Image 1 (cartoon, rainbow, N blue to C red):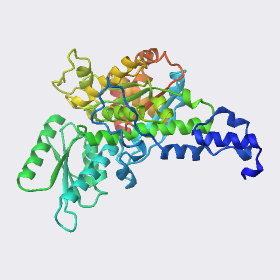
Image 2 (image 1 turned 120 degrees about the vertical axis):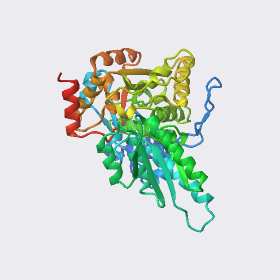
Image 3 (image 1 turned 90 degrees about the vertical axis):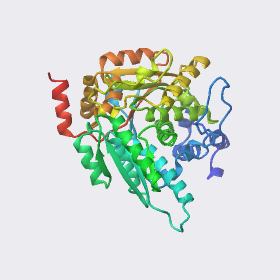
Image 4 (image 1 turned 45 degrees about the vertical axis):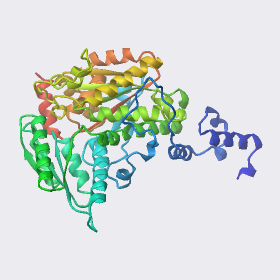
Length: 449
């Protein structure tokens, strides 16, 4: 095949393959000599970054830079415990946010219905491997994981654990948990206990049960819904996928200079901070990797932490003068899945680190706290269902509100005006506490008064 092509064409293709880049000039090649974009992207994915030296001004503790993105949570992924979800272009939201193209990362399509499968899959496979290694028997002992959850984390850990041999699940949920979610948990085989007025009370009981099991020699392991580095690493895979999928789409369309593409903003809901920790970890891993294309894509990215009024524990801590963790008196929001009265300290540390890196390098990296009303979160759910024919709960609607709300969208676009060609990515985190009747009720309560 090579011998049948002209010398200039052969040299051009050789250069492209060796460099790993797609140049606009590929359009001038004949149909018979056009390189296969997917093969080159696959090679890029296989040869992902080795770490490069980070600035000594930025602390990089607790993040694995030695593993290329394709190796992160590899065992959980190989067991199909979580999915590579679609990244789709949203024409309706892109029109609202012109000139910024808007992409939706559809983690509502994870097996349990939310992004939490990512972290739970990595955590459960890791603790089960440790448990098996510590066992003195020829066959692995049964073990139990005990989790507290407003619903989605419990669904995720139950969905994951039922596909791991010899693993049982107990989930303790607060009284605010929707009956729909409780029924789903039980149908999946979880032992469900309803306890406490909020998640913190349910979590205290979960920790007590694990302590009691350890004292009696049982094999129970506590699984936090959001406060564990293994969860964060699992969640970080969403950024690896987003970067790869954006590159694939630009190659397929052959309309965008890859080196000039930027992720201007990533929008994500915040409850206890686990997802945000993972997003920041994924951004840092790719930013400091040796693959310049991937690094360039996230350089200058603004991470938008989205909450509702009445559940804004991240905003309270992030905006505090001394950076201390603020504990809310209670949760007063329809977004019950965001119902942690305080966030993990790690999410404040990582957010400040990301912001400081942007200030030091003048690259524009930042973390921005957006707080919407319950009505704006519901508006996001309703409009998203109309535009994209998918249902999400208000906790996810909080991450859609900065685009659907005129008030918040104007603020976001103003903060992105330094890079008009950058793309906006929304982590559509999902949530199983929604159906048509619930969505109709929220619409009547908040939008039709």
